[in-house]
Image 1 (tube, rainbow, N blue to C red):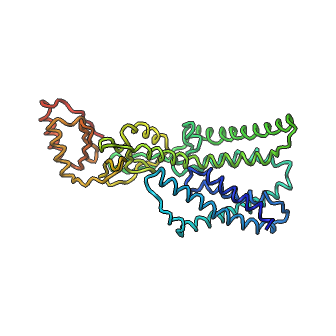
Image 2: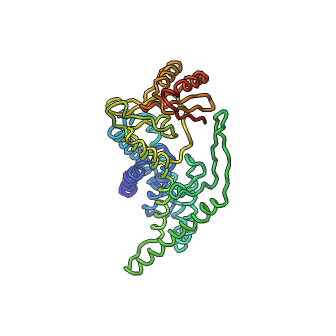
Amino acid sequence: MKKFKPVVLISIFCAIIFSIVTFWASEIDWPIFFCLILAGFFMVWIQKETVTYKFLDKLLVGSLLFGFLMMFLMFLRMYAMSHLVYDAPLPLKELWDEDMFIIAGVYSFVSFLGGLLGIVLKGFYSLYKNKLDKIIILIGPFLVLFSSLSIFKIKYGGTIMSALHGWPYPFLIHQIEDVVDGFSIDKWIFSLGSLYHYIIFDYFLYLAIFVSAYYLIRYVNKKFKKSINSTFLLFGLLALMIIIFTSFISVKKSYIQHQISGAKYCEAESDCAIIANLSPFSCAIVVNKDNADRILNLLSSYPSTGELQCSGNEKATCIQNKCRVSVDHTSNEMYWEMLKQSVENCEVSSIMQTHSLEVTAVLKSGMVIKVKEPEIDDIFDIIAESKDKCGEMIMRTE
């Protein structure tokens, strides 16, 4: 059993560290696979074996322990967050759900594959130890560049650098809306300038980081007479950059969700408002009106794919001092009567008509009335009759 001790310890260590490192990342999202592969890699590199088959039994035990412990720790994290932060408590019995064991099996399998990759890399290290630093310095930036370009789930063709610096997208699917039917149309855009930004500039930027790290290690070893292994540190830098880049969108999404959840306090229904319909958050994002501008700024900083399909009857309400969404079952006919009465009583501050013949009226009280396919001529007649009493209203079409 003594021979299993180092692998067991590194498995426990990796499970604890990666469950913390990936705190904001989605448990079933693909960036976590980099952490699983690294765990298997470390299980191999801690062993002192030189023959391939002698790695396998310890790697198998370590991978199983890591996979199930990782699943358990992540479930505990989700359980705590669901009760303490989010308004959707997770039952403890979900820990024994079949899906959890499937996830643990996937974690174990991927970490085992990472260990097999580690065996191959360890063989290369023993053969090309003196040249491996240069290989990592040259190839490492390409791997980091790929991890940046691979962020495609939300920002089509976008990269980590576009989110950080606002550069143009390299290969963008730009969605435009048909003005008649309202359907989304995909339009391909390619920019030579973005090829420079994302391929050439990014590679040399990451190359400069690796070269700087390499010469810094050499300087420290020479200045302080140390024997720091530059290969391990360069590989660690590569792994760290890949994890940060591939987890960026997940981190951003979870942070915004956390901020939305914390911006829902209310004392009355009038405190709440639906401020946006944005994928992947909600078709009716509701918060306290005092937090609306801050949350809208956060939402605008997230690369979204557009709006979600909703019933259109959602409205904001305050339940147990928390802004929530309720479904409005008021009929279109009742809204039509409310709109006519509001116009006649000079309670309307603005009216907008869309190409789909939907009329949206904003009342002076802040309430919004939407009427689908109303009797357009009637509403214009009422507005014309109300001019003398109410004055001009702000009207526009789109």
